Every structure is written in C-alpha cells, then in structure tokens.
Length: 309
Image (tube, rainbow, N blue to C red; front, side, top):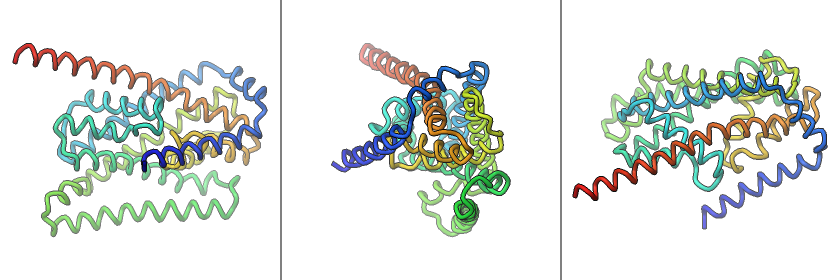
C-alpha cells in the first residue's frame, strides 16, 4: 500500500509538471527543434555519457572496496548498468539502487555494506555537484534572481562544510566506538579515502556537465559551457529527489525555467530535457543487455548444478 501511494504521488508530480509545461509548449516549434539536431555534437555527447557511466561505476567499485567488498571492475560496471536500465525503462517500479543492493547481497556482500556503498556513492556525487555550484554561482549566476542566487550559494557552502565536518567527527568517534557496524560504515572517513571519492564525485559531475553541454550544442543553444556547470548540477540535484518518476517533469521544468532566464523559449528546455533522457536510454539499453546476460548465466549455472548433483 505504501509503495503504491509513493508511486501514485510521483506519477502525479511528473504528470502535473509535464502537463503544465505542455500547456505552454508550441509542439510545432518543439518538433522543429528536434529536427534541427546536429549529429557531430550529439555523438560527442554520447561519448562523454559513456565516460560518465564508466567513471560512476569505478567510483562505486572503490566505495565498496573501501567498505570491505571487492570485485573486478567489470562486475560493478555490469550491475551499475543494470541499475541504469531499471531507472530509465522502469522508473518508479523498482529503483536501480535497490537492484544494485540486491545483486551485491546475492553475491555475498552484507546488506549493511551494500546499502552503505549506494549511500556513499550517491553522497559523493552530491558533494561534487555542490562544489560546482559553490564555484560557478558567483561566476555565472548573475542571470538568477539575486535572492535565489544567495540562498543557493549559502546552502551549497553549508552542506559541503557539513559533510566535511561530519566525516571528521565520525573519524573521531571511530577511535572510540568499536561496534562492527559503525567501524564498517566509517571506513571511508580516512582522509585519503575521502579525498579520492570526493575527486571522483567531482569528475563524474564534470563529465556529465560536458555531456549535456554537447547535447545543448546539438540543439543549437548558444550557452557558454560555464553556465552548464551551474545549470546542470542544480537540475541533477532536483531531478534526483524522490518526488517524481525518473525525474520526469522536474528535469524539463528546471531546464525550461533556467534557460528561460537566459532568453530561451519553453520548447528549448523541454527539448533538452527529453534529449538528455533519450540519450540516457542508450545506457539503459546496455543495462538491459547486461540484465539478460545475467539471467542466462544464472540459468546455465542452475542447469549445471542440477546435472552434477
């Protein structure tokens, strides 16, 4: 009942936001925007999406290894892509993060380590986005309402400082609390580990921003790349909140609003949002292939076990 209610609320939010945007959208202009897509920057965007996915899987692998669960990179890449498949093709039905936890637990990882690996993986991605906001809000945020710019700047600084202070505090407590669960959960608080994961989180954000920048170029947007390093982290943070199905509506609404402040019509923001999701379906398709291969492998293993028992 609770899951159905959550799904219903997310569906209502996505449908409501998209309905609001569509009432302001000239669909003929939207279609013309898509028809004018330039292929060279689109292909470059796909390349950077692949790099983004690859580094994201690497970050997750390193997080899990710091927590005590080690597997080859290919293992984490396959499961990461399967998670992307569930997030893109089946949004709201079964979260990709839950699927990733399931696979790790199935392969011998404890639920605690599996859950914390996802939590930290997401957390360091958020820290990378917050750092970009902290840097580019003063540099490129002049088009935002002054109060909103200041509020975002303060919030980014507070959250970043809070994360660093929390890591220091947990490291301090780690020397005094010997409980196995706490010791496991705080293994990433060592300075060198925290820095590595923080830099990987930043790298992931940079690659994703470059990816969307080239998507914008393919649509003919004349927006400088530094502005993407402000717009896209903000869009990503809002779209990742568990209030919609796969970020639908929130992603397009955020882009339409921010690009509207730069003088672009609603259709451009909607087009960029849909194109971003559409290109991400390629990663979801790769995850679908990994999912099918995983199922066939499990079936062969069951046949082998039955034949040899």
